[in-house]
Amino acid sequence: MSAELRREAGGTRRAGRPPAILHLDLDAFFASCEELRHPELRGRAVIVGGAHALRPGEQGPLGRAVVCAASYPARAFGVRSAMPLAEARRLCPASFVQPVDIEHYAEVSRSVFAVLATVTPLVEPASLDEAYLDITGSVRRFGPPEVIARDLRRAVWDRCRLRASVGVATTKVVAKVASRRCKPDGLLVVPPGTEARFLAPLPVGDLPGIGPRTAERLRQLRVATLGELARRPTASLTAALGPGAAGLAARAAGIDPTPVVLPGVPRSISREETYSADRRDADGLRQRCLALGAEVGRRLRARQLVARVVTLRIRYADFETVARHRTLPSPVDADRLIGETAAALLAATRVGGRAVRLLGVGVEQLAAAAQLDLFTAPSAAPSGLDRALDGLRQRFGPAAIRRGAEGAGPALDWNRDHLDPSAPPLPD
Ligand SMILES: [Mg+2]
Image (cartoon, rainbow, N blue to C red; front, side):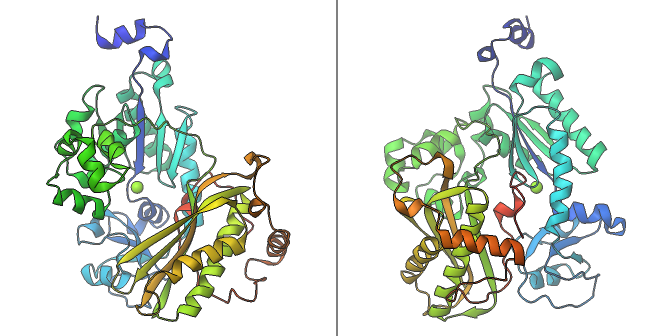
């Protein structure tokens, strides 16, 4: 009896079938959206970023805009996301630049998610162009995971004219590594039981959750590959990396207990802004913390959420980026608490002495406001003033009402929770 038949013979007991998780990632999504509506861009070097469309060779006001996305022909010239647009244009003068149109990309994204929903109801959006699907229960109806993945890639192409890379594995982390490894326009299946072997030769930086700083620390510990990371005794890793190390080592072996979760509560909400000129004014930046905190609070309340952790992110002029966070005694959604906590975190940085190019305020550890229990401290109670301001903004637009201390700021950067297709539309 083949393994496949044995699994079928196992009947409807889901426990008898290994989990099948699919990670789908659209290739160069924003750039592909622009190519779809501007066919003359197809197959060309396309850069999405900034506020103005530019043809090859054309000069324009790039300011300090950054690359939001790039087509593969542009990437061949070294163009990368988050790179200053001016630098990208120097690397690839023959590129077409298209301004960011997030509303349009969200609309295209919805059409893709409609296709994904035909395979399983268990779809977890990771961003506008990325999703995890639990297809364990779809195998009986649609065939083995590799067949489902192949058919899904074809359906996304047929119905949306978009290329997607798909990884299939028994866990989310392995599926994601697989989809990254087969980009662009690829399909990679990691059969059950081969997860650790698949990951072992890969560099530690390939594991989602290992950033450049952790990768550097691992290098110092002479851990270069995921196989080496998985084999290291937990105690020595924890001593060097902190309490998260055990989980990291497990993921390096392909073990990941996190299930595919339906959209609901996002992981974080944040607002960031990049300044057209570097700033050293500590007072002004403090005011911006309050304004960004108010913006975050408004988005929390629009989704009826509260947050436990406030975060601050600063990028200095030399691109060094620091993040600070503070856990609050009880969950909050009030503008002032979020803003003032961020301002307190700001006071502990080297702001003022060092030039700042980016400032961001965010919240994490979110929960539905309705789930709060009776023992919730007063700081979680929605502030009447905040609610009143939300109502006025809804009627007159987001810029209409500001508290005295907030001050006018630059346009906000696009951020991850903008890219959450599950998010309900906001008043603005
Ligand atoms: Mg993508």
